[in-house]
Length: 242
Image (cartoon, rainbow, N blue to C red; front, side, top):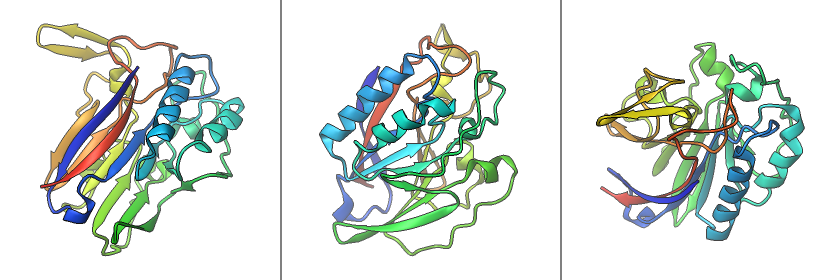
């Protein structure tokens, strides 16, 4: 797996927040046999050692209920993570191995389900909002009142959020879901994503109308318990002034 530090330039970022570090993890898919379990453990240990300013976990944490205790133990190692759920957490998926999970408790961190919190950091206000995956899949808008924060961050499991959010509402979107393709066939100067051949935002950094999005390659797997030319990744984003 890859442990990556990546700089992101955000237009309008206050100078006081230059160098702010956000750890971005996604798609653990715990509860089923997979190499993703070990990847998630390594990722969490790495983040815990680095102690970033913020930690964001963007969904698909569990594929079966038996992974819940392990998930809670991993989250307990992280410095107050902000967490959203994904479609697999509710077993809204074609994956025959997925089972719904009632994640009714989060002893460590904040679970964001169509709500937001504002935290103070370096004398500035940072808005952290999270989309409930059920709202997304049912095409119900997640309306967030503008908090007037100095940095506005949206956590949404689904990368297509970049196409649907109001222009300029969010400075940074953090997403996951696509596992960088999980099973990828390289060819010539490109690659074919077998699971999501038409994916517009499979992994990496994308910009639209002043909003920057980072899509995590994630850590776990679905359908088959391995990846091919799609390395799992834990990412630390270092924000820079535009």
